[in-house]
Length: 94
Image (cartoon, rainbow, N blue to C red; front, side, top):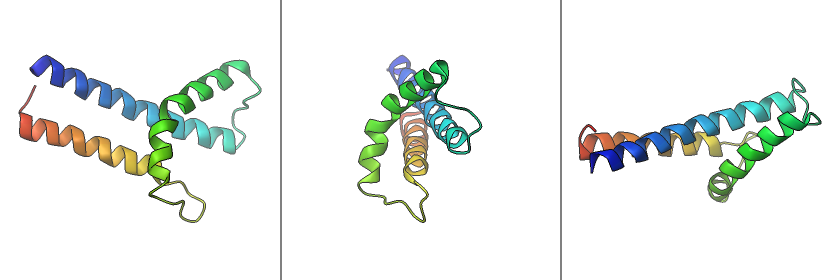
């Protein structure tokens, strides 16, 4: 059971990194630091969007934007953190 839990923890950790990368890329595009007309940047942005949007879209139905700021990534990161800590606390170290 421990390898399975370790795999779930690893996947949640990697998804956290993907969400943070998606938010950072969105900010960089919005502030014109990088340009999506570059094919490589566009592909990375499209990949990150396709990976994160199904989850973030569902969260956006419950958490509206406050003052034009999208809070759904913060809610998702807190939920991932809660699941990871709960797994470690209730299921023991793995």
